[in-house]
Length: 211
Length: 242
Image (cartoon, rainbow over all chains, first blue to last red; front, side, top):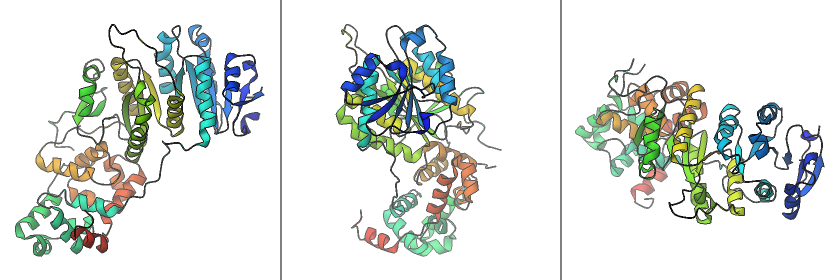
């Protein structure tokens, strides 16, 4: 099965049944190179970025033409590819769209993108194929944020403690945990008796019954 | 046992949803529908952005189609997504069809290459997209997602409010901890006897009490024990770092 292989960059594997379709000519027009493939299983397209796509047409939806069975097969097919469902949402099929969406998203847990027809689908696929080399502005970035300012901000949440006192307290106790576990007499030299008691109470006073 | 029996708990079969106060101005119809048609328990609070929290791990934002299509919104949207990704395991965008004004010859939305690349980028990052025709449908989708999250065991099960000044202050302190979202902070407020109990808890206890995953609990555990750098403190004191 060709499913294990990836098309080269800028190419897609496309099911045989799409030959002669408007989608094919507009994909070609958009600069996507097509490799026809008869072994894609239920999927219609395989992209180089490891996405496989199932196309649900207006006709499938209106005729209730066993598209649910096809979707289930698609979902259950073992594959390391990211699965994606394109659904034709047209004047004819729009009354069924919310049912289809609920089935695809909530029952099967697959991502769904609506398209107005083959022309829109080909534009979208073209962006997926050719835009993939560019940086995705939404990619997750590992954030390594400095903890020091966050810790300082947390200490300033203690009532009666502003920036100056928070800095002095952290200089003496270093961490939130050590500050929390300090006895009032240890806090007193830094913030005075009243605030020392207030800080201690704040950390130790019951907030909930707990379990 | 929880002493706070007087606080509103979601009735059985109902779902709990938190909404940022900014969601009201843009979505009165949606809020009304959530409460009355879908009998969701909605609590309005102040979040760090205009979004909904439907479970301990999932946030939902609502955008119009033209919003996503506008070039000038891309940077802000990317920043929003990355800040939500720090706080939540799952993010969902409800994309709403633009409402045509009455009398306005409805111009069908024109997909652009830019719009398509935005959609493709979002899907690629694992953002869940849901498609809606308007406020009413969006309310239904929100309730559906919340119910799905409930079935999977991620529902917010503690009361959506804390009562009293001290509890409110504790909630604010929890929100300042790294990677803690409002639902985690609520869970911690209700499940730990005191702030000191949370601070001295093991990673496992933080994970359980905060209803969060292990890596998040580890991050909190580390932050609570983190020793501030004396150089940072000195420069902050001198005002150079403020």
